[in-house]
Length: 535
Image (cartoon, rainbow, N blue to C red):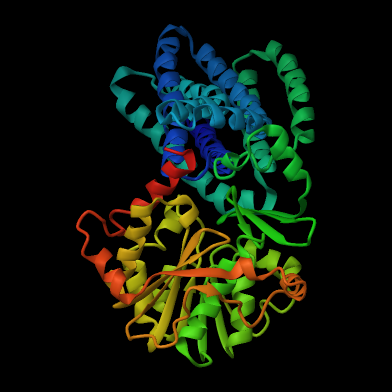
C-alpha cells in the first residue's frame, strides 16, 4: 500500500508542475513575460503551497485514523482536479478585468503589482492551497512509527519531486506544443480526479462520488466551450487604448488566421483590412503594420547603402513578419535567417510575402547560440529582436551579444541593431548606443520618424556612404507599399534623421552616468517594463 501511495504522489507532483507551466504560459499572455510578472506568478504558487501545508499539517494531526487520512488525500486530489480544470476558463475571462486594472493603476506601480498578485491568485491560489494540503496527509499516512518519520517524509518528497520534473518536461515539450493549453490542463485535471476517486474508494468514502461526478459534468461543459477573448488586452498592448470598447473595435478589424502553441512561445497571426500581416508573440504585437515596416526595410537598406556594394552574405536575426528577410533576399545572393520559434516560420511560409524564405538558409535556434558556434562571416548582420522586456529578448541588446556578432562580421562588415525608441527614455537610448559603441569603433544612429525608433549602424572601419537626414526610400518594397509609392504617399514613412554620427557617439561613450548593458546587468529588461506602465 505504501508504494501505491508513493506512486500516486508522484503523479500528483507531475500534474502540479503541468499546471504551473500552463498557468505561467497562459497568464504571461495577459500579464506579460517580464521578470515582475513571472516572479508574481511564482510567489502566488508558493504562497498557496505554504498555506496549504500549514493547514494540512493541523488537519493530519486531527485525522485520527488511517482511512480518514486517505479520504482527506482523495478529496484534496479531486478538488485539485476540478479547480485545475476550471483555471483555464478563469484565465480566458481575465483580459477585460486586467484592462481596467491596468488603466486604473499603471501609474501606481506598487498597487499595480499587487493587482497582478490578485489576478494570479484568482487562478492559482485554490488549487495550490489544495496541493499543499496533500503533503501532510501523505507523509502521515506513510509514517507507521515516529522513528520512521524522516524516511517517510523523504520518500514522499522524493517521489513528488520526480513527478514534478516529469510534469514540467512533458508540459513544456510534449503536451502544450501538441495539444494546447486547454487539453494539457484537462489531462492534469483528469489525472488528479483519477487519483482522488481511487483513494476515496479505498477509504470507503463512496458516498461523495456522485457529487464529484455531477460537479465534473458542470465544469467540463463550460471548459469545452470557453475560448480566449480580447486578445489585445495584454500588458504590452493595453496602454494603446483608452477604453475596452475602443480595443474591441480595433480588434474586430483584424482577422485571426493562425494560432499555435510552441515550447518557444504562443504565436497568433492576424491580417488587417489592408492585408498587412501582424504577429502576436507572447502577447506582444509585431509585424507589418505601417509604422513597423520602415524599421524592417531600413534595417537592411541602410547598411547596404553604407557598404557601398552588393553584400555577399547577410544574416537576419529574428524573422518577425519577414519584411527584413524579404528585402535582404533582393539585396544579396546569400541570406541566412535565425529564428527561435518554428511557429513564426510556419506563419511566414503560409501568410508572408511570397518568396520570403526561398533560397535562404534557415536556422531554428537561439541567435547567440548560432553566433557562438557558427564560423561563417557576413557583410551585414541585422538584428531586430522583440521588445526587450523579458530575458529571451533582452540578451540580444547586451555588450556580450554585440561582441559575438562582431566576430562574425567580415573586416568591412556592418551590423545594424534596432532600438525601440518609442518605449525608451532619452538616457536609456543613450545606454543602448554606448553599449553598441563599446564594441564597434564607428557607430551611426538614425531615428525613424514613422515609428519613433532608432537604427544603429556599427562597423570596425569608417563608412563612406552613410545616408544623411531626409527621405530614404529602399530600392525594393513590399507589394502593398509599391502601390502606395505609385500614389505618392510613401515618402513620410521613410523620413530618417541622422541623430548621431561617429564623432558625436563618442560623446556618449564618455558620459559616466550612462551605464553599459551587460548580461550581468540587463537593465533594458527593467526599463522597458517600467515604461510600459508609464512610470
